[in-house]
Image (cartoon, one colour):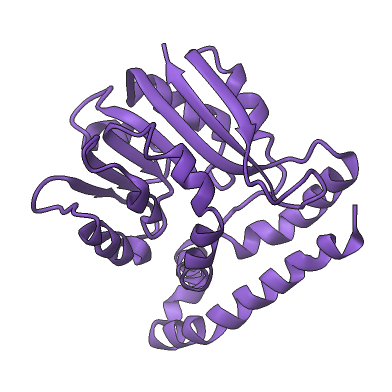
Length: 259
């Protein structure tokens, strides 16, 4: 692989620090106890990072999302790690009856409401629900939805890279939250099939995950999702057209239907 691609991550890390350092310091000065609450401080830091990165990442992935989401998402949609709710822009309003944003970082909830309102979804109309849980908190999600199998479509856009115990967590969501015949859609950056790239992904992950709220560069999501024995049908395909196996961020797209 070309060596410069290895160190492009440093530019992203620098931008993350530059864009978040000042607002994070201000927050600490206002509430010094944040220094003793590392989880809260991490989420505040990530919320500031996402302000700098979210729109650009969404725009880069727009062609992929336009192919993946409008034609496959329907009914009640659960968006894992919703961030600012960019997914909602790609939903077909005639097919989708409700958008549920699963986002544990409550600093991001105002942006979700804003994007939802722009797309015609609202809590007042009961077409929008924001859940402050992680994807691993299945029992809380099921309880908030009023019972099991309440969702027609689960979408994961660059979210499985951060979920703790992703295989166990996703399987629980599929088993307990998704209806039989429901769709699971994903667009994720994954472990490269090239050994040299994979080595660097593993090398950078310990540092990267600290800056980006647990994001792991080296998860083979595209391999373990198809192996789950809960699918009626499914396929994994190429992500963006402008990348190859030499990229540190190598993306795959998945469309699966539950038995």
